[in-house]
Every structure is written in C-alpha cells, then in structure tokens.
Length: 176
Image (cartoon, one colour):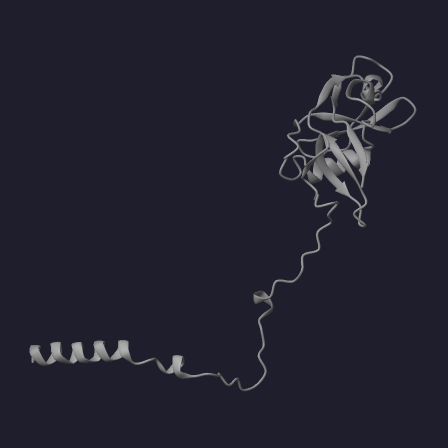
C-alpha cells in the first residue's frame, strides 16, 4: 500500500508540471452581467487645498502654514518661535523684531492657529500652553488673548500697561 501511494504521488506530481492548468489554456474569460466595483476599491481624486504643493501644517518661508484660501492663491504662516512674554504695545511692533511682513495675529487668526497647528490639534507649531496676545482690542483699554492649552478665549487685559506680559506668535501673509 505504501509503494502504491509513492507511485501515485510521483506520477501525479510529474504530470502536473508538464501539463498547463485549465486557466493557462484559456485565451479569453467571459463575464456575464455588469461588473460592479465597490466604492471602497476606487480611489477618488483627492481635493487638497494646495498652494504650489503646500498644505496646511507644512513648513514654509520661516513658519508653519495654518491657512490657505479656497483658490490656492494666498495663505498665512505662523512664525516658528514664540516671542515674549512682552506687553501688548511691544507685541504690536513685532515686525521691528522679526522683520517686514510679520505682525500680531487678529483674535480670529489666533483662534484658528490654536485649532489647526496648536494644542487644539497636533501642536506641530509647538505652542506653549499659556496666553497669547492678539491684535484685536476688547475695548479701548484692553486687548483679547487666547489660552492655547485649551483654546479659552475669555481673556482680555489692559493693553496700555507694561505689567501684563504674555506670549506672541507672529504671523505673515504670503501669496503665489
């Protein structure tokens, strides 16, 4: 019985190598009915908001991209580093320290940075958890701030004094 099994194995193994499989013999395959692809199998074109291959979160021109317009023509970057702490009057002149084009962000721009590249997201902008000045006044004597640890926007302090010192993250607009 063992000899018969060895003989059968050797006969069938040697025959299978010399004969093509039924799929190899077929020249065409007939498909009956419509072919339906599952949507998960298809890769739809991705619509990225790019600005010459830049996307939000990229490093560009001395900072982190945190906004690109819908048409891909303009954007905003946040400086790599914090400045300060400093009083609001000095924060409003941040361009003197960093160079032309840099400015203190508006309250809305600061909130957007916190949500996109700050601690409201991945914090790839490496923001501290403290308060940051905005260029937006609360009233004639106070300016608005954002606490980056949690995005709290209820802070506003005297913008005219020198005793209140908070962080600054300058921004710059750019276009292509």
